[in-house]
Structures are given as structure tokens and as C-alpha cells.
Image 1 (cartoon, rainbow, N blue to C red):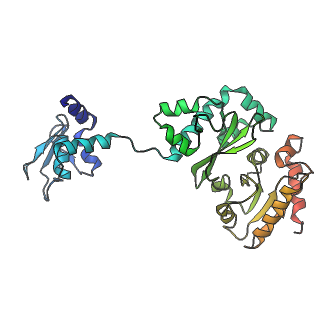
Image 2: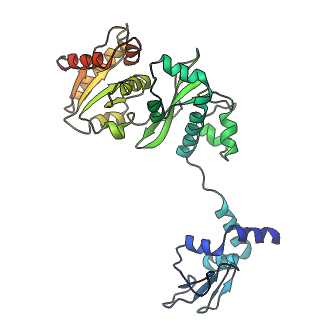
Image 3: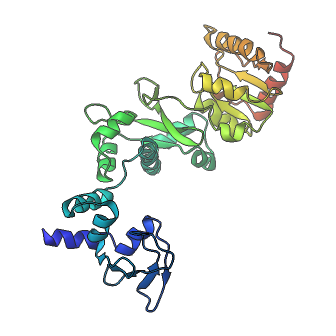
Amino acid sequence: MWEKIEKLKRQIPLLDYLRRHNWSLHQVGSQQEFVGLCPLHTETRPSFYVNAAKNLFFCHGCGQGGDLIRFAQLYFDLSFPQAVARLRQELKPAPASESEVLQQAVAFYRTQFPRHGEALQYLHQRGLHDSDLIERLGIGYAPGGNLRRHLTALGYPFELLREVGLIDRQGRDTLYRRVVFPCRERGRLSNLYGRSLDSGPPHRFLARPKGDLYAWETVSAFASVILVEGLFDLAVLWQAGFLNTTCLLGAHLTPTQFAQLCDRRDRQVFLVFDADANQAGQQAARALAQRLHGPGLTAHLVQLPEGHDPNSYFCTGATAADFAHCLEQAQGLRL
């Protein structure tokens, strides 16, 4: 038992502990001697001395002295066992936040990306070739099979990974065999989007809120905004120089995303949704345009060739000039 007590005192140096409790001090005499006002009683002249080398304190005003555990007993009015238990509790790391776990997952996926040629090949197939942009977007790859092992080795409990949505009940990676985009809310990582390389469900988010309009912290500065449905639509438009593009991560705005678009009344919003044969994308765009007119924004429907979204449009050879022409044509469109 006493070996554990001595280890505890080594793990929490008395001087560091006092500083964490806002004890103001200054050095006196040797480099290991410090003095300040006593935290155990009221005084106006410093009389509380700490010897950092010996890990001991003594107050000439109240006569109290001892080691770390004795200080905790006196300061918090605890018994010896209670003081030891409190100090051991303070050694435990703070519970990890969900955002922190997501950040670790994103970092892991980014390290996996260059190790799996199929991920880069898929991005090239989707028209994304700019390596700097891939880095800027934080794109990674989930090969599957080792995320759980990696995160638990870092100390994150299995149940937390499940609560966040990174793994399923069997411990399998939720975004298995997908390229992964991080999504943020007010700058904080809030969700991950995975696009399948295989024949499984193509789109997958973690079972969490989607977050803000994509990259809204920078796009919000533009008075004219291009709004698209998917992240690959956004990626090819950024690659072509249209950095005022944001993405709603689906076909429907959340209340938070709608409020973001309406944060300035002079904003023009160009809606570039899928031009699919069943007209679902265009119908959603038209309905959203009418909603945006309510708060006074100017909304334009951008027409792409039938069967195309911005991603497929550029993949089939369209240029930035071609897309700019589509935006110009949309200026005069009546709802």
C-alpha cells in the first residue's frame, strides 16, 4: 500500500498541484524553494513555503505542514483515505468528447488514404485530381477492420465508439470501404460522410446530426452562393474555382442550414441540384427557391444538361466556362 502512496505523490508533484489550484508563488533562496500566501488560512504576508525537491510544504503562520496527501486533507477537510481517493480520481483522464473521438477517426482515415490505391482511383473517377484540394477537404479512407483496434488502443472505450456511431454492435467500421469526408458544425467536427466504393448503399452518414452547410465558416462571406446537394458536386466546383459553393449534404435543408442561408438579406443563392429524369432534384430545388424568396433572398435555378449533377457534368468534360455560362443563364430564370 505505501508503495502505491509514494507512487501517487510522484505522479502529482505538490508544486504542480498547488499551481492547478491557483496558488500564487515566487521563488526564494534555492531554485527549489517557493513562498506564497497560505491557502489554508487567511493572511496578508506570505508564510507558506514549498520545497519542490522534497515535495513538502510548511506554513509559518498556521503551523501546518506535510506532503501532498496532508495538504489535500487540510484543504478539502478529508480523512487520509478520502484524500488519497480524491487524488487518484484527479489522475484519471477527463472523459473523451464525441468530437475528440471523431477527430481521431478522421486522422486515422487520412493516414489510410495514401495506403490504398483504390481510394485515390475512385476520386479520380469522380473527377477529383487536385491533391491540395483533397488535403484541404480532409478526405480519408475507411478500409475496414482496424478502426476499432486503433481507437481502443488509444484508450477510447468500445461503448463510446458505438455511441458516436463509428462502429456497429459487432465492432465493425460503419464506413467500411468508403472515402470519408468530415462535416463540421460551427467549426466543430460533428459527423462523417462516407461514399461507398462497392455495391453497398452509396451514401452513409453516422447516425448523428448532419451539421452546418459545408464550409459555411468561409462560404458565408460571399454575397452570391452556389448550393449543391453532394460533396463530390462541391469538390469539383471548388476544383474549378467556384469557392463560393456550399453543400447541404442531401436534398433538404435542416432548420439550422436554412437560417445560415438567410443570415444576410442581399444574398443570391444559385441552386444546382440533380437534373435527373424523374425531376426529383429540380422539384426540390424549386420548392427550396420558393422558401428562400420568403425571407427576401434571391434564388436562381441552374439548369444542367438532363441526367447530370455538377459532378457528372464536369466528369464528362465540362469546363469552368461552361458552368459559368449555366450560372449566367440562370440569372434570368423566372420561378
